[in-house]
Image 1 (cartoon, rainbow, N blue to C red):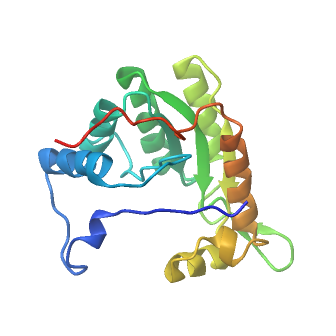
Image 2 (image 1 turned 30 degrees about the vertical axis):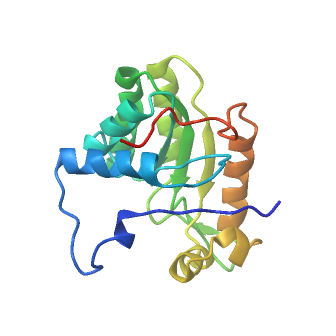
Amino acid sequence: REGVLKVISIGMFVDPEQPVAWRGPMLHRAVEQFLTDVHFGDLDHLFLDLPPGTGDVAISVAQLLPSAEVLVVSTPQQAAVEVAERSGALALQTGQTVAGVIENMAGMPMPDGTVLELFGSGGGARIAQSLTRRLGYDVPLLGAVPLDVALREGGDEGRPVVWSAPDSPAARALRGVADALGTRPRGLAGRPLGLGPR
């Protein structure tokens, strides 16, 4: 079914030519304000796109939404895999659950049917296996999203690729991830986040 996607970003409130150079307390307050003051209405899911690693924002989200689940996203190359593994392993300290791993830039389908693995391959699977061992429960690889011109074009136009090019390789992969997440029992419909305005 077609849904509604609601988005908020700090980039909507600052001059696009100015960097957002905030220390931990400012970042924490911004996340808290987005969670308490933005009226999204009833949500099925709330996704927060965080910087990679185990920095201030990830710790703030763990404090503000302790029951939130973590999706670990990584490109296939080893340096990115190591950072993603650490961010997933942070769940041990915060008491959160890792819902799964998504590999981005997994390869580029070529016109002749081959796949050009620009950034290597198998990084997402390695993260899922490593986190399954470290966390003591199954951490699945939810999907591998290929490099896809349609994905980049949809992003540039502000139209999700699943709507702008639904038959593209990236859209098919992203629908697979959504389907895997959609089978999970938890949803936000009718549930408060547990935070309120100050």
